[in-house]
Figure 1: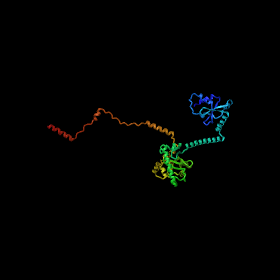
Figure 2 (figure 1 turned 45 degrees about the vertical axis):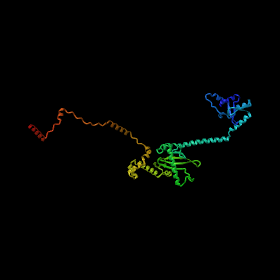
Figure 3 (figure 1 turned 180 degrees about the vertical axis):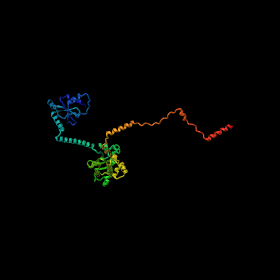
Figure 4 (figure 1 turned 120 degrees about the vertical axis):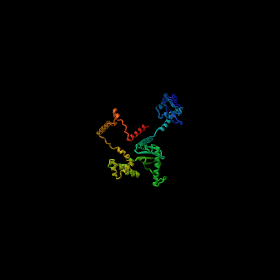
Length: 394
């Protein structure tokens, strides 16, 4: 059935609206002649076929033209939900059916007030959820929330930018999930062992567990998420140790905060390392990085101080504080002198020392310079004489 097929009913009557009844025979609305003509005028789109008259095109309000229609005629044709004419109604029957329809759709003022309150409450909840998401996204510490099985449900920007790219997590959420799940299990087991409690007993209610992870250089707090006394997940808060373990003294010196270390239950090794590195750094700064003078102030050998500086990685640990210092700006005069010296060095090139060539000699001197034969010794002369005499005898 197409909507334009309903136009044949309006050709047989002067009514501008026709009532439509449902399967049970009760009035469900009115179809307007204007709507059908609008569908017929739209030739650009192909109109779909319907099994029954859609309720979207039906009107629920009583139009004035319907009341004026009963001045000229006594009965009005009624259509069923399939678009076929079913029966005729007179004015009393029509008004009775309309009163039923109006009572169904008419809202009680108290009910409307309740609906408005529920809508406002829903809007406020949506706004609160949006604001909570905004707070969690901008929280300075890293946050990661998982369900009971350890699958990540939420993590904020701080966790994604500060902790996830670390080599320990390998920029993988799965590795972080596995590590935090194992950490939660180990801390919970340690808590039960220290307090002599059993897992099945309801005497304990662990809401928070905390620990320090050296690989991440972070303080991790685990918060249990509950709903109606049932554990639904866990929230992991990761805070860098540098932001939670330092305080500024009255003189302006940054130093480890022992109160914070006691409250957070920091391990002794970490506290001693922070205290020693800060004390060595401040001593070096006071002695203008002279290791010999700093070693004498600390009453330790110079080699021991050098080894501790390398072991504690003091240059890397306090790199940010060193970059904040003001750099010494050289004078212009010194710059000019340095440029002049560089130019003079470039101009004065070293001359290669060549060996002097031998001078040409005249032919007479060359003959003189020829080596004369050496004079023969007396024995050689005697031998030669004997040889000549022997030849003559022959």
